[in-house]
Amino acid sequence: MQEFKEKIRFFLRRSKTSKAKRTVANFFVSSPEEAAFLNLGELAERIGVSPATISRTSVEMGFSGYPDLQEQIRSKLKIGITPVERLKETPADESTPIWTRSIMRDQESLNALLSMNSGEKFQKAVELFASAPNVYSLALRSSYPLTFFFNLLLFQIRPNVHHISIDDGQLTESVFDIGRNDVLFVVSLPRYTKFVLEVTEKIRRTGCRVVSITDSELSPLAIASDIAFFCRYESASFFNSNIAAEAVINALLSGVLQHLGRDGVQRLEKHSNAMKEWSSRFSLGVQGYLHDQ
Image 1 (tube, rainbow, N blue to C red):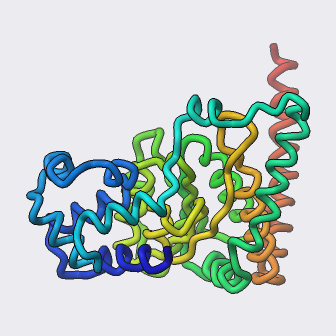
Image 2 (cartoon, rainbow, N blue to C red):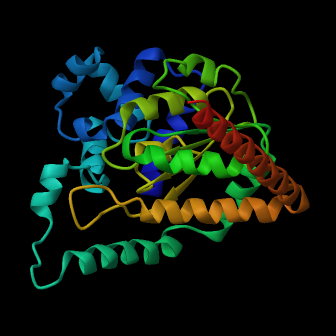
């Protein structure tokens, strides 16, 4: 699996790759579930390149051809399924209360974190988040609360923390100043959000480092990341569970504060005092407003 990921990663980072071949490679990254089952002609029509370009690109990435690449995707990629399909595939265990099954499933996901990730990788991520000029975060849909939480608390212990804005139409303004040595924190779990993957890849080309949370080494997001944390996301029902991903974030925030030392604590104290001051003023303002009414 590592070899497969590195082949695609290395190819995408080549500076002299033609636009057509990069289109092919980006499709393998952003839409592996489609590439796994489209024949050569269908894929060529789908992305607007010739079958020969797809075949040559597959070979240049280190595979014997498109069939070889496609077979590896099929055998190694864990394809996300729809909520309804997931619910149908979840075994019905009426003998165990759903309360117990749900908690036990999350416990299994938490227990797997240490075997799926290394302390060395964790320390590198902590150092990046502590020392980067700017830290940006990005996620959509059910992963959005994770990056919002991360952004909110990281801001309390270090400056220059930004959450990339999409819903208000200010994507360009949110990413305009991202540059080399900054860090982007991204979360995407099956079913992967294609827009997030596309934005991540574009930002990475600026020289910004990417730290992510996703489900496996073959995730499109992992391929586009400098550091990727892996976690299980299966729940006892139809939705992704964010428990394991949240545990990774909790550890990262704790590690960053420890790394920052006194500087982080002083900023936290300053933030806490500001919260008290503003809360007091807001409370007095509300009371005055109610009194006037």
